[in-house]
Length: 397
Image (cartoon, rainbow, N blue to C red; front, side):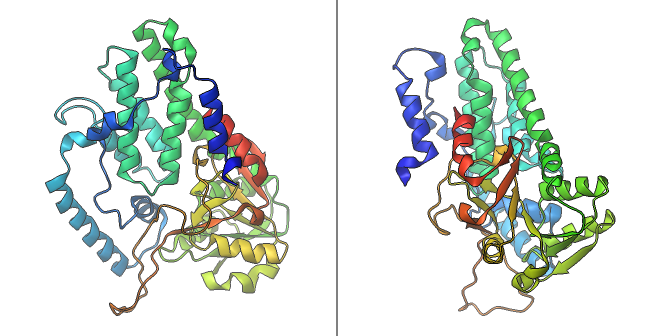
C-alpha cells in the first residue's frame, strides 16, 4: 500500500532525476539550517486553525470563550518567557526586521481569506522585503519563513500544503540560473504574486463547476461552515436554481448555524438540523456537499468532525457525497485510520459542568476514506477520488 503512495513515487522520480551535480534547482536545503527561526505553537493542546475558524464562522458560548481566553492567556505568558522575538522573523536580525508570522496573522484576520492564501501572501512579502544579495540567500530565507509558518500551527493541513506548493511553484524554475540577481528576484516575486492570485480565485472556479451539479428541486445536506461550499450554493442561487439546504448544527462551535444564517440572507430555503439527526433526515436528501481541511493522497479528505459519519450514512443510502476543496489543500499525507493524523484539539462546551474524572473527546476533525466520496470539485477540475494521487504528483513535481 505504501509502495503506491504518491509521495514515494514522487521521491523516486526526484532521486532518479538528481545527479548530485551543482544544478541550483536540485539543491536541498537542510531543515536544521533554519531551526533557530522556527516558532512552535506555545499551546499545542488547542488548534490555532480551529480557533480562527470559530472566531470567523462559529457561534460560540460564553463558557467556550472563557476556556479559549484562559488557554490563550496561559500560552501568552509561556511564550513571553521561552520564545525569542527573532524566532518569529522571516527576515532581519535581532527581531527588528520583517516578521512573516506577524504578516501572516494580519492577513488571516480577513474572514474571507483562506489560511493557505494568507500564508502565500505573507511569503510573497518575504521576497518583497528581503535584503538578500544572492539567490541562495533568498531561497534560504524563504525556507526559514516557511518553517516558521508551519511550526506556528502544525495542526493546519492547508497551511502546510500551501507553503509547500508555494516553494515548488515559485522556486522550481531553471530559468533563474541564467539571470542576474535583481531580475531573478523580480521573477520570483512575479511568480509568487501570480500563485497568490491563482489561489485566491480558486473558490470562484470551484463554485462555477460545483453549481452545475445542483438541479431544481433538490435538497442538499451540508456540514459546518465551508467558505467554498457557501460560494457554490451562492453561485447556484444567483443562477436562479431552486433548491433547499439542510445544515447540521456543527457542534461544538456551531459553524452550521452561521452558514444557515448566511444562506437565509440569500433567500435560500434552509433547515437547521442537530448533528445527530443526519440519518433521520437522509432520506429527504439528494446530495451531500462538504468542504475539506485537507485532501490526502488516497483521495480521502480530512475535515470537521462528523464528516465521516455523514459520508457513511450517505453511502448506505446511495446518496452522492461531493467535496469542494481548493488545490492548495492537497497534502502529501496518507492516513491509515482516524488516529493516524496530527491531533487538532479544541475545547468543548456541554453547557453543564463535567466532572474531572470524565474524559472528553476534543478532536476537531476526522478522516473520510475515498470509497465514501463521489466527486471532488477543485480548481484543477472535477476529479474522482482515484485521480487525486496523480494530481498530487503533478502539483509537487
